[in-house]
Length: 330
Image: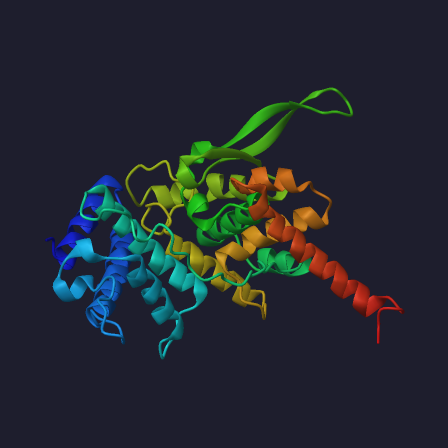
């Protein structure tokens, strides 16, 4: 017999070493498993008819008694308790528990993985929120000074909108990731240089994304007139965006840059780092870009992930039609 709490601790040590998880991610796994084992401990070992209930692992302290009914009941509990969780939160918590039961089955503590057939509740599809081209222009223009911080912030914002990069991808860039590639102008057949950014995304997969002239000018101004001042305050680092002490700019600091710019632009809509990514994709599709090209630029593994943005543009078209066409108004 292996106590459930000891099995959970063994699993947490395993993923900490094998997956190299951050303290934040490991703490999330620990909280999820603690919620699960605490709930299991409150469950009876017999049902209302007096028959033995499948499961009851925590009551007898044996991970080997975990059953599908335990996980299914846990999902139902999360959805119906006094403070029910949203479907996405339930899915995340169930994922942690299922990962644990898969590990337990692999170790031979369970004859079968009880979580293999348990599915989370379906989450309602949430369309990504983009801001208009006009609002994006206002936001970018709101950071228009010449001091080092403003030059850095303008370069960061321009790059986010020009590339659709995730905030973690943007702050993870190195100076050498901004470069030029030789290309041929289709109209003149002459060689020309194209500015690009080499973005490292999820799973360390790299993609090349063009960098527009406005963004390249902002990045160049930062590199020449601001970054050397930041770099002189810290140790040598290849990071593109630097903080006040000369170290790589953190995600949290980049968040604050975006919030300050949105406030300066007097935008009423909530603006987050992902707003730039959503706006990048939506504006490209509105301009006639092929969805598979946008997929490559965003670094999506599946085009299905990108196609959600086509629903956003279709939604906008419908709204315009209903408010503008005389036969659509009622």
